Length: 345
Image 1 (cartoon, rainbow, N blue to C red):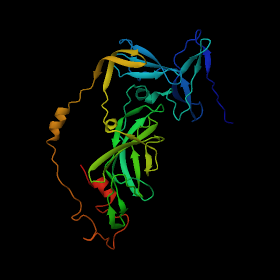
Image 2: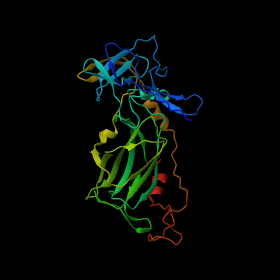
Image 3: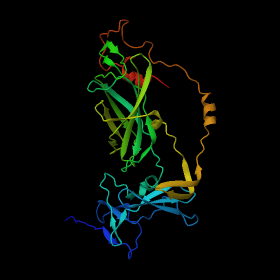
């Protein structure tokens, strides 16, 4: 007969007469005489964040949005860290455990991911990749050349810097079945197109993906213009891959170019910190100096050559009519897949 194991955690208590370490770490324990693994909430005891007795730790307490307390930790050696206490002080000098109803609760830390989860400036472990699967005929995208960008975010919607950039996706009027029907669009002219994107190698320590894009087109006078946007609702991360159908029916927030070119500080250690009017200030910062000048000099020695797999531009006649052996899947020069994968550097 299987045995049912139930473990109950206190949700409230007396703040003045109780002392316990933070109860906000998840361990996977195996039930004896079985292969069943349980997620057990344990004390925040770990050796993954590099803190030791030889370096004094400076801690700032910061109120969080749900009434809990964030601990901002610095020791002049390790990266700045933020750890949520998971409890909130309530009336009569008591505390209450706050459970965040999310896919992955951001105030519970997993031992294997605790280093990345507790960093104040989040970094990624994997570099994701954009792939274009197809440009379909079931949408209302505006014409132009699209470039997509991805940012990761945790369950509290804290976003990273841009972690991936796609190649250029061309959206046009007409169909590749009949090349003579293909033409560009002017300004905000809509098409019947949609874009099917595939993102792989996603860092699953995050829970959401924000999709940004730039669209290059021309105005009614033929001058080149660029617009920038962001899909308002992020995409949920459930595994290391994500399929996105971008069809023009999404709710878009218009942004400016600066939001795609924000320069973040690369902070590796902080010695002093303080809070003023709910703003956190760091002093005596150590950072990473990237020698951009040397990289620029090295880039001058990289030879660039023109490569072309086929001797012709495709199986098309001079009058832009398809030949008999053409099919919808034929990758001609005008096919968005050819433009995406074969043009550029």
